[in-house]
Image (tube, rainbow, N blue to C red; front, side, top):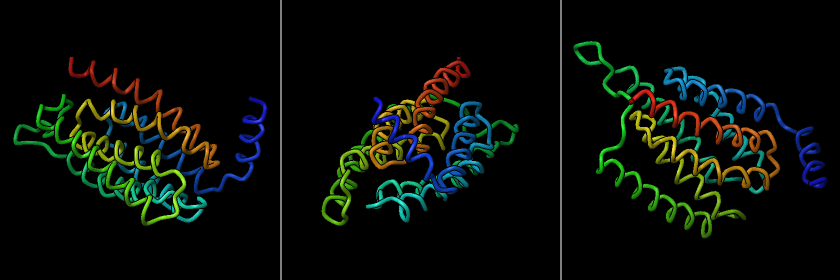
Amino acid sequence: MTEIYQQFLTDIQYTRWQEWISTLTQIASVWYARKNNILVYPTGIIGVILAAWVYFFIASPPLYADGILNIYYLAMSVYGWINWTKVDTTNTVSYPVSWCTRSELVQGLITFGIGWISIYTMLVYMTDSNTPVLDSLVSSSAITAMWWMAKRKIENWIAWIFSNIVAIPLNFYKGFMLFTLMYILFLVMAYLGLKEWKKKLG
């Protein structure tokens, strides 16, 4: 534990400004997601752009899947932002909080499976990644989570819980101490988000 603590202190001293700002804005984004607040998206966009920079240009070797994942986050944030602001003729939101239908659940799980295999294969044969299993797991589960969140599906929090559990040791191994702490906090917030969204649905 002493060695881990010393590594943490050393790495935190050399944390880049991109990681600091990305961490703070992503924490704000998850907080707003918990509250079902549209500000989840503008704060998240800032965070994922900076996170992509960290993963592509600061990590050594780069965390390719996580970098690409944050570009996906950017696109899905724009898509989710549009969805969450949509209302019908009675001024009722078009995408209220709800559980996945059977088909939506199956589609999400299939997307996760295909994503995991595809990203893992790409990392092994096309990059110099030394963490292909964890990197591909984080990315594939987060792809599904982000899609479900854009549709305001409660299951998005379950997918985030899984993704965060895997992301914690991955970022610690890479020496990203702020991101490690961020994902620990995200894990707690995802659990609380799951409880809050379930309450909203009744």
